Image (cartoon, rainbow, N blue to C red; front, side, top):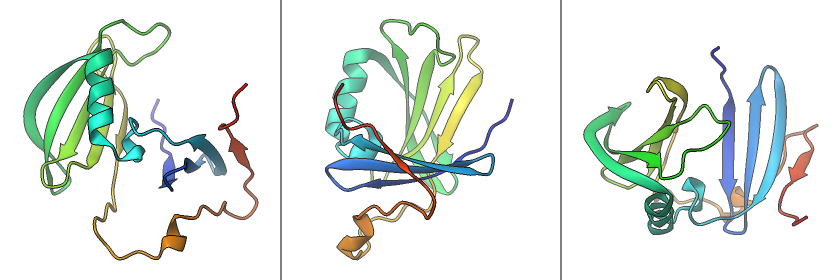
Length: 148
């Protein structure tokens, strides 16, 4: 089954906000910031977590759109239960280190899911207010930052 979802991710250093639109519905979430997630921007922390939890393997370089990328496959050291993703493939822009694409592959090595990042802009002059999250009209933000 093919499923398409459009997301806008805003990371303000303290929280990560995600607005998703799929099947004609919008939703939004707020999560605690984490340096080791792609949107956290700390590649060192992300790679440390990748190496700790996975067996990384450097694959041949590839392009995502017009962007030349380094490609790394990450196979979990401990297989995940109840998930269709057996390993992940990450494509990082050679010139900036930005994550440009992730692909989740199933146990048969078939593509199970993918995310491609587009409209990526680096070092643009941006008004700081741009990073203040504002939910779209009519969308309630589910706050996942509170600890149970």
